Image (cartoon, rainbow, N blue to C red):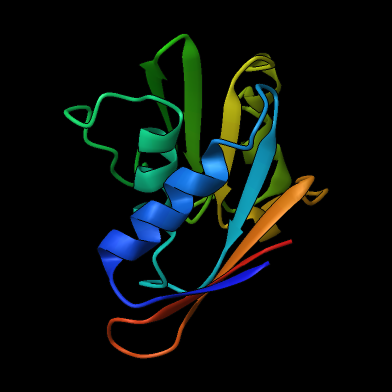
Length: 133
């Protein structure tokens, strides 16, 4: 399914709608260049699964993993941008979060692609193409 977002707010709405369809234990891979809207999409996902909007969702570029709790559900937000090899990914313990919704930025660094893939592409300064595969 493809969407055309004309603003960051719309990208968040698409992420929120998408996340409401996810079951606990789902892994979502995010793909796209820097600035394509991956973290903005995750902010919407967090709202969609009931994370309090005061728990500001930011990119875990330096921490690599952020956990957000809300309404009995957990969102695990992973950013692999700074990961250099597969061994480093193994140390993150991603398989420990079986009951969470796992969303992984820069998922192309994983050995095996996640079951659900979201590709974000910059169309113009404000517009993004969001494709769910």
